[in-house]
Length: 128
Image (tube, rainbow, N blue to C red):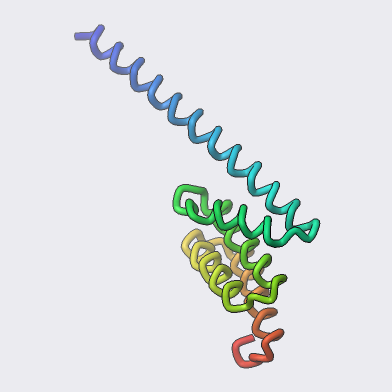
């Protein structure tokens, strides 16, 4: 009986270790893709940055709240810089929703500033 318990415990630890390393490698890969998208954005390659960030945004439910918020907020920034204000507001709103869920007040403030700036550029002063 004691040997069976010991064997199950070893299997459980191996299973958890495998899950942790798999999750970590995926997270590292996604963070690398995110950094690449930011570099593309900073060099003015907005279409390529949009494509990479959109790809990342499809899996935001699998990421940490912080990472999801960053992906969605930066996707909003890309659309804002392209003059696609409606799309920018949609992504900012998604980021804001996640920031509220995670109780990330600093992120909420940054996102609200971005939404306000879009409304100001559209001369929609009441919503700004």
